[in-house]
Length: 440
Image (cartoon, rainbow, N blue to C red; front, side):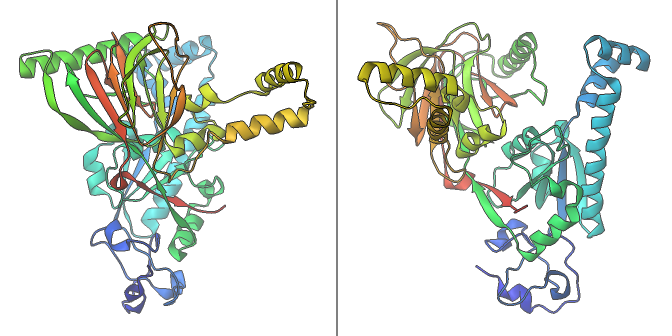
């Protein structure tokens, strides 16, 4: 709905940020709406009006250079020792520093552009990003790659707060969830287009998680951009479990009602044993159907965003497990030809077409309110069955029978998920993430 009342305002203020949109504008920034100055945004009564957020949080990634430097500083090493150890690992100090500087310069470009338009900006490292930052901001910019965007999205629980991703190192990151790459270097141009309403809202569906059962531990472990080792991961879970035991006086608390976790998954959720060589034992119910015992190397549930992300190299297990490669398609077609006697073509073009069509069937729109679940390498015998290895669903429930399992959200946040814990994964209208689709 076009907010014509904004256009009729006659204050002599210049719009200093984005006119993000034409829908539910008043909800986006609370009372931070500002009148649109037609000389800047060229807004008539027939055009889209927008808003000016007073406060924007820019959440930045931790670069590899920062990560490595922090590790070696803790060890008390000198700068020269740091360089030598990197060289021993096959990493280049100058290369890491160069990528770090590229990222830093692009973040400064974003911040300067925003502040130049009179916007109050708070720059936050991903380790400092929390619910308080989300509450403070009218809009949030993710400055990094897709991993940073997923982290930012996980803590934004309101569908009325816009999240915009900017890829700060386009040469090393695809940035599928971010604005088109060209806007990294000309961010003011992106702001101008948003101000003129030359974009559309993309409402991305997300997964909500309810956790219940015996001995559950709803305390998350933040895996950050660099995955923790198994030893660190287990230790982190032991620490949080001990802390809960001290608070409650008992290790295995029974929870009668499901607890909604304060996190939303934009991409995928993976459930499985921490030790990948150990089979994951669990029970699964799809859309309130009967429980089925499963043993496999894990279970993955993804959104439409996750299904599309695979095309752009974001790791999504459900897609990578189920997609076919041309070699497999060719071998299946050869068997089909020999068994049926049919004249099935085996030329490269046909094989490629069949492969692409099958893989594209696994991809669905980010705004579709449905899940895609996939059982990874199921074990099938007289005890364990696998009636369906994958499929679409509205709700998936999982009861853990594992020893040392985790429920990992978007590759960055992990929850302990051991024997007796029950997770219910579903979608809700109120959990949509408000993002921007801006043409290149």
